[in-house]
Image (cartoon, rainbow, N blue to C red; front, side):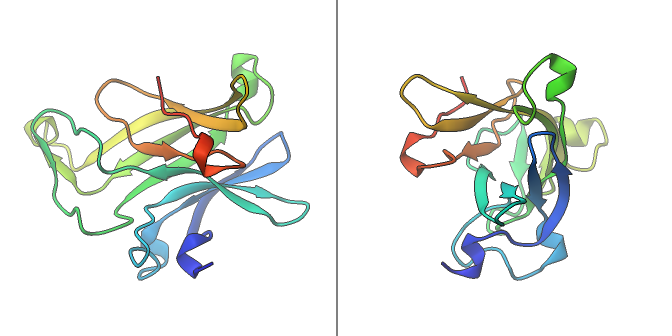
Length: 166
């Protein structure tokens, strides 16, 4: 495994009530650690008992942007990041480690409504949800508004059984 295939440039984290540590990557903290293999910034689940790290979500910059907006730096892998993750499961009556709130900082998205409203860059507040489907491994999915779908989701056990958001 290359260094880019593992956890790079850890930034924000939440030691959730399920005992796992959820970590977000930030390219700014480790310049040069992104791009060689094409992996965008990700959210990882770390097992505090044995150190195992599993990528559970990865930024997907190929999605549709808000009307009139553009990604001004497509070739800069890792330019978008997720930030501020927190386990909010108990606030919604869910089992620990099943519902997280986080945001996406789409640093290179501008123009359209962003410029019109004198904002600086794109971004969105999102839910990351863990569940289980019939006959599937565990998976994470995202719940978000209609403007942007920002993350790819990986099964915790096999890359072939990921589920896209509904």
